Image 1: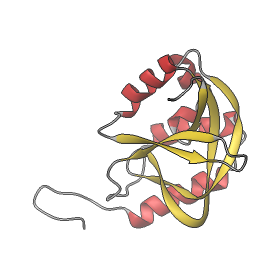
Image 2: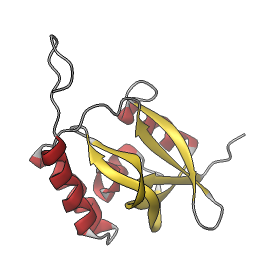
Image 3: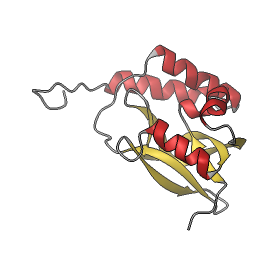
Image 4: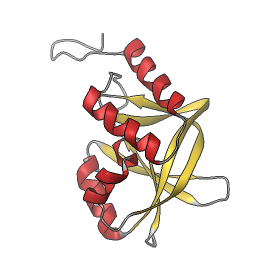
Length: 151
């Protein structure tokens, strides 16, 4: 049984404190952390994936059941994103959303990226991790067409 409130680790637009106040009015920011062996990637929207030796910056939120329900709608759970719990260094579980399909990589829009950049500032996170993820998305960008496989 999951007891709420609990920790939610945000890495994309949910880092943005102003947007989270609109989505989840009872969520409380409680800090930040670097999650080892994962990295930020973009599939149009933010995602994280396992990547040995890398790390992803997370903004940590205490959320309630109501907040979780709002986040599930925003994140397209369970179709677009699934929920996973990662264990941080002190043994606490942190819930994160991870995309169901991790086949494509493509850059975010400038508007979406600006929202995330503001969130990085809100949590005083290392902007270099964001810059690296955006550069990687342009380098690895893949395209789907209805008639073809990944190009």
